Every structure is written in C-alpha cells, then in structure tokens.
Image (cartoon, rainbow, N blue to C red; front, side, top):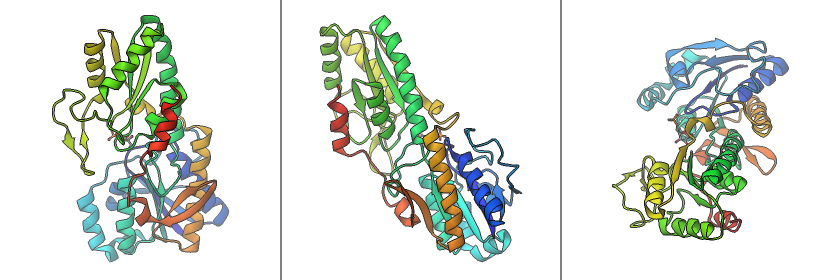
Length: 341
Ligand code: F6P
C-alpha cells in the first residue's frame, strides 16, 4: 500500500508521534510505502513530498512541532483540486491519505473524501474542542504548561499583593482555561461558553483581600467575553458562530480590574508557549494509538473516517461528525470548577 501523510493547521505537541507511529505500523509492520507531504495541503497540491522510513522518524517521539511542516489551508485551491479529483487521484497515486489536523483540516479531509480520495483523518488540537473524540492529543500538554505557568505566577503575585490575569488559548471553547484553572486553583475562570460578569470578579478579589489573602489568580480563555454591559468595551468582531469576540481580552480585563480595584492587576498572555515543546506521556500515547489505528483503518478500507477516543477505546467515526459541531464546556463542568474556590 502507498500511504501519504500530512500535518495541517496550527501545530500541536504529538504530531511527530503520530507520524512516527504511522511509519512504524505501515512501513515496518505491514511493508507499506509512506510518503510525507510538506507544509500540509500546500505540499499535497504542489507535489512536494518525501519518502518516510523508520530512520526518518527516529528520535521524534518526544519532539514538539512537526517534521513535515504545517500551513494554513488554501481553501480555494483545494476546492479547485476536488473539482478535478480524477486528475488529483491519478497524480498522487495513493492508496490512502492520512491528514492530521484540527477542524479546518478535517473539513478539508472530508472534501477530499467526498471527491473520491481514500482519506483517513486524525484529529488534533490543543483546544480539545472536536466533538467526535473525547480527547485530542496536545491538550494535556497545553494544560500542563498553563498550570505550571500559573503555579509560578501565584508565588510572585503573592509577594507583591497583585491580581494576575492569565490568558490561555481557546478561541471557541474553554477547555484549557477550565482544566488549567482548576489544576492551578485559579480563583476565577472565564470561558467563551459563558459570558463573565466583571462585578463578580471584582467582588471575589475584594473578598479575598478582606480575608487577608494576598493575591488573586484569574484564568481567562482568549475567546472569553464579558456579559453585555459588564465592562465598557469597544465592539468586538462577530465570529462564524455568531459570537462577539474581543482581541486581547487578558489585557483588557486586567486594566479594567486594576481601575476598579485600585490594586495592581498584571496580564500574562501565555500564547504559543502552550503549543510548543515536548508532548506529555499521555499525548504521546494517544498520538501513537491514533497513528496505529489510522493505518489499520486504511488497510480495512475505512475511508471518509477519522480516529477518535471513546472512553479508553480508539474507534473510527465519520469525518462528517468531526466538524458538525464544536465540543463546548458544559455548565456542570463549570459548576465543579467554581465549587473549588
Ligand atoms: O486552534 C488552536 C489554537 O491554538 C487556538 O487556541 C489559537 O487561537 C490558535 O490556535 C492560534 O493559532 P495561530 O496563531 O497559529 O494562527
């Protein structure tokens, strides 16, 4: 079998573990040929690829990023290629294509599958917001990085009697904010799923200081937004889901709190540090399992599907399910998080 693999969209710790696993299972165990496309779908459309054998993937299990490179999707070019799918299928000469990526990549994967290409998807995102799988690899690493950062920020905040507002990733879903916030014992967690009231945060900080607590920690997802009228703000941008988004919510919330509390409030934007570096053991294992099962699915001819974690099992699920809706933090998970502070 000739199998193509590519990584597309934002990078994520664990991508290399999937590539390694695909090569080990396909080349070593099953005698397949594997080629890696460079820079995501761009490499696929430009015909930029290289053979991958077990030597090429030696030592990459613990390495962050992706040895194949990644790029954002050029949707129009891909659509055009799908319209001429016979030419694309002939040119690629693949028995299976394994694209590894998030929502945009899986949507593209579905387009290619609908156009007749033998596609098996592998989901990834540090945001953990793909509804068809219980977990995505990269999430555990991102939560660990954000937790460690907040643990460190607590000690410096306490020394200076400050409020720390830590902005973590999560454009449409607040999973990183929820879990890192809980793990670090944040006193306030703001997520995109639930507009926050600035008054509540002000009250919480005042009560803490009244109880002789010397600092407060607030974890805010980048996609979180204040309830209407709760914070004087410029108009946000309406996103594809009809939600109003604000760029730089961490900075804006910190300055609002500083103004209202008369205490120093420092914004810390964690940004891409959450996506870089070595994956945790959990993410390496999940990524390796996804790679193994993707190759098996290709051999069974399970195309138009993607790997998914259900409980402890890896299952195959239609690519259509991957992108039908985002997995958002439910209210009961927020209730649990709030009862800890
Ligand atoms: O989708 C994952 C994600 O990490 C988001 O949380 C974040 O908004 C985005 O990627 C940023 O990606 P980039 O800066 O690479 O476009």
